[in-house]
Length: 527
Image: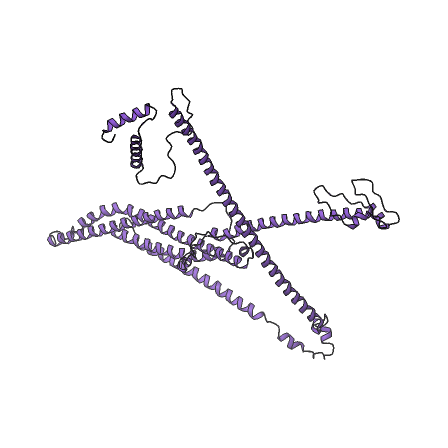
């Protein structure tokens, strides 16, 4: 077959398969090498870690009569291979599950041992602390007892009657000297009357001066009436700018004073609890947008003013040229073009400038209000954080139940720690308190459950002892028969009057001793 072509080899292969696999050893070796080469070409350099299966393990193969003996053997071997392969994979999965359960069990046991060691260590530390506290208390009580035995510890040691019993009385002082030590209020009252009279005079003088100034203003207006409509647009604009600057300066001064006073008064007043939610991000975004709008409006105002100055300069140059050219012919008419040129532009820009000034004042007021609100909130936040830190320093709950840190959490350096001091939130300060409260509640519940369990064990043990005593005194246990008392025994009679409850089913059976064998008969031992 080595000299045949590929098609001839495939045809020969089909003949071998149809004949039931009868072929010569050379052909068998050649077919095996070809299959190995195809497998190596398909897998490449990868290593085959499991046997290759060309048959589906779940496929059921029907035994046909047309198969030859070799084909039946092959089919049987394929079925055995598939079943063994399934058993192998099932065993492998079971081994993996068993290994996982064993590892989980070991981890759980290690965690339980660590928890027990930690609990033992905490109990030892608590016992040590209680012993130290007990020693300090004993020392204090011993010192107090020693102080009580001393003369200064007697109740009559500081009694004035006993202290000054053997002393001479002081000489009597004259009444004039005693009256001289009293405070004279007459001078203070006379001084207050003088200050009140001066204040009234000052107020009256201020009213008279104000009335006189008002009268003078009315007289001056009557003599020289002032017509606002006759003013030029340049004068109106100059007056408007002056009023605007003065008003803005006055508003800034008043807001600064109000901001300082308001911040101090807000600290003195009690905080009012409200249910409204404060969205700091939204307020900051709105203020930022308004501030950008304010900057744009100011820029537009400056551009308009610069344009007006440029127009004024051009009009002045044209007016001077016209005046120099027509100085001799028309000296009076030279001002009219400039005024007519100034008037339309001024009247066009005046409404916009007034609106810009109004917006500028509003933006200024909003910025002042924002600064005041931020200052107040920052002070309140700082006071709250300081109060929480002060309480945390005095608290015994937080050191006992600290918040566990994540293992992958990096330790902050000095620069990060100092930069985050001012950015600390109140929620981050309150979170340790909430965690410590929850942990303390759980610890209290666990301790209560343990104490209840210990109490139940003690009750069961006491019931067992009572049953023991009833048996020794030959008294029937209540619930199991009539109560009988030992004749001539007062203790037994008293015990029979107050029967003991029968032990519950869950309690342990008492251990038999020699006294149980006596069964109340101290004279002889029952066989």
